[in-house]
Amino acid sequence: MTTTLFADTNFKGKSAILSNDIGNLRDINVGNNPRSVKMTSDNDAVLLCNTTNWNGEVLYLRGAHQISDLNDPNTGGSKGLGNSISSTRSTPFKVRVNVSIVTGDDGTLPGTWSSRTAANADIATIIEMANDFYNGQNALLNVALGDITFRADEKRFRMDQEEWSSIPASWKVIHQIDVVFPDTIEGAVGLGNFPWHGKFCLVSARRDTVDQMARTFVHELGHYWSLVHQTEPANIMTQSSTGKPLVNSRLTNGQIQDIQQVLARNIARQGDRIE
Image (cartoon, rainbow, N blue to C red; front, side, top):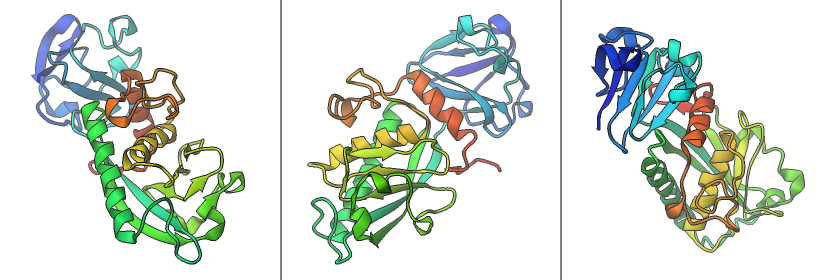
């Protein structure tokens, strides 16, 4: 895999092969504001950002590309951004999720979980499957599991529409994405609240398989990060009733661009982000 930046348009001037994440392009010979890029492999993926340390406006590129002018949308560039690229990223960002599993007041577990140990194991599998999906898409995303907390709440054990809009403040963890697993959700198998920042995701535990819960989990994170429903069966943002399983689903370049743009401004993104 090789991604090469050039100081001038049409692949001219000083060049630099990207072998690692660069928080400030002034640190390499091509300098700030490279004007063209070559990507030689279908497995390449890179995020170009107009602010140091991978913030600000972003341009996500995946697969073999030859963009002769990063400031020209007609060649695959982005008007304005192409004149101000200051950092590049080719490894995943980390986002941490805070999981709440809702039980009945008597401790009844949601879905078919027979024990808290079984629930914890399935949540770990869901996170692993989500990361397999993001890795396969070169989405530059990694989901890390924060805490799993069992919360007795008979009212929210089976959520109706009155509970859709909010969860108790005590269930939330700052700088993490709050994901709640009730037994059922009235009229849905999952919900990613709009607007996304500061909200939460719901995933019904009343599903036949862990694979189904994992697909819903990734789908609802998509909503959290601004994605809307699609109709193509293979797209992860197609509703589960007509969509393909997670292992056969995909994200488009534009969808990953939208996710990364939200995350560039979102405190849920952790790891190497410099506040």
